[in-house]
View 1 (cartoon, rainbow, N blue to C red):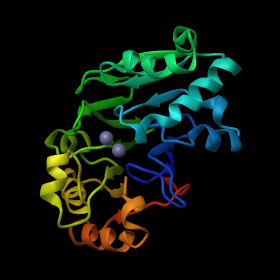
View 2 (tube, rainbow, N blue to C red; view 1 turned 60 degrees about the horizontal axis):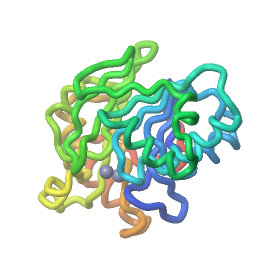
View 3 (cartoon, helix red, strand yellow; view 1 turned 120 degrees about the vertical axis):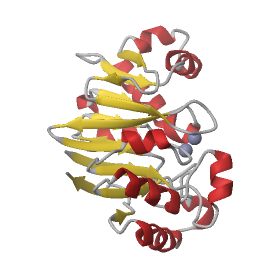
View 4 (cartoon, helix red, strand yellow; view 1 turned 135 degrees about the horizontal axis):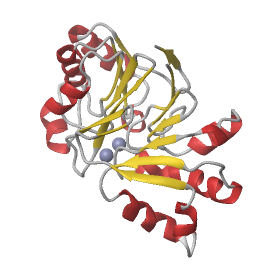
Amino acid sequence: MKVVFIGTAGSAIAPGHNLPSILVNDTILLDCGEGVARFLADRELIDYIEYILLTHFHGDHITGFIGLAWYYWLKGVKDKINLIGPRGTREKLGGILSLLSGNPEKIFERFNIIEVEPGKRVGSVFTAKASHSIPALAYRVEIEGKSLCYTGDTAYSEEIVKLAKECDLLIHEATYPPGMEKKARLDGHSTPVIAAKVARKAKVKTLALIHLPYFKLGENIREIYLKAAKEIFPETIIPREYDTVTL
Ligand SMILES: [Zn+2]
Ligand SMILES: [Zn+2]
C-alpha cells in the first residue's frame, strides 16, 4: 500500500503546507484539502481516482473537492467516482456545487455518492464515529493485507481505538500542542499526547501525526509534537507534504 501525504496542515494553509488530503495507491483520496486537483493533475493521476472518502464538512477538508468536481464534470469520466461521506453528504455538496453551476445534479452524475452511518463498511472501507464538533467519520482502509486508519478531526475516541486496532498506519490528527488536552477535548480535537495514547492502545505499527496548526504556531512545533508523542508511542512520524510511506 502506497500512501502519499498531499496535505498535512490543520485548519488553514501555511508556507509549504497544504490542507488535509492523503492519496492511497494512486486511486483513493482521503479528504480533499485545497490544491488536491493541482497535485493530481501535475502527476497525471487525476483521471485515475476511484474513491474519495470525506471525513466531514469543515472547509479545510473539502475545499479541494470543488476543483476536482469541476474538472471531472468538464472532462467527463468513464466510470463514476465513488464518493463516500457521512450522512448528509449529497445535500452538503449540493449546496456547494449549486454556487458553481445552476445544475449541480449534472456534476453529481460523475459520482456514485455513498452516505455511510458510523460503524458500517463499504467493501474494504470501514468507518467509525469521530468525536468532533459536527458529524464526522474516521476511516479504515484494508488492501492486500495492509491497513491504514485515518481519523479526520477528532477528540479521543474509543470507537477510533477499535477501528484502528493493530493497523499498519494510524494517521491521527494533532491540532493542539501537548499540554492542551482539555481544550482539545472541548473543541473536538486532539494533541500529540492523545494521538499517541490511541496508537498505543490500538497497538498500531506506526503513528503519523497530521493536521498540525503550522499557520498559527509555525514550523518549530514539529519538534515539540514529535517529542511529546514519542514519549508515549516511539514509532511516531510527522510527515511533510508529498512524503510517501509504503506499507
Ligand atoms: Zn480540520
Ligand atoms: Zn473539523
